[in-house]
Length: 190
Image (cartoon, rainbow, N blue to C red; front, side, top):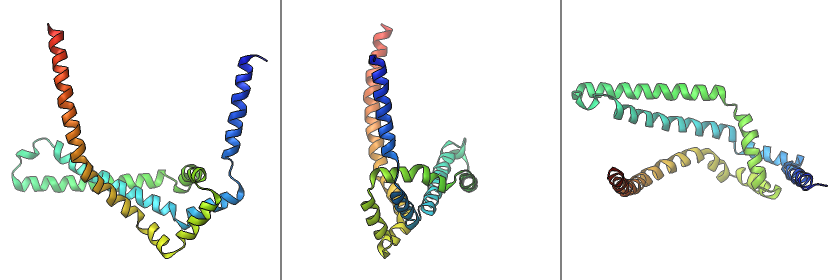
């Protein structure tokens, strides 16, 4: 048998073994589906996407005002109208975006395609049983209920905390790199 044939056979057998490991037993499938149900994952995912859409809307609103030509030259009364118009536009964008996402994203299919394989990879049957038991408790029910808000607030606070630090780091690095680039340009002009 040639070396190429042996390599191909080895790759095929290795891939086949890996695919066999990906197979989910009926028992584990039932546990995975129960976990999805007790965590109300479809509703939580949809709610989280809605919150993300709202954050995008806030960013759009900020960017519209920052990039609106002549905004800073408007008299105060017209500036206020421009702010309201930008806010209305960003709210329309968010509403339309969320409606389009809701029409185009099947959350059940998303869960089956994304979460089931990931949960299968990281959780054993015993893990799943423990998680299901927890999510059936009052604390688990509350955890599921408030998780989108907790994640959104944590993301917002992280952004508020990290953005100034990241901007300083980027500014410092860009300043240093600009000096290096200026020196390179001087050398090239000689």
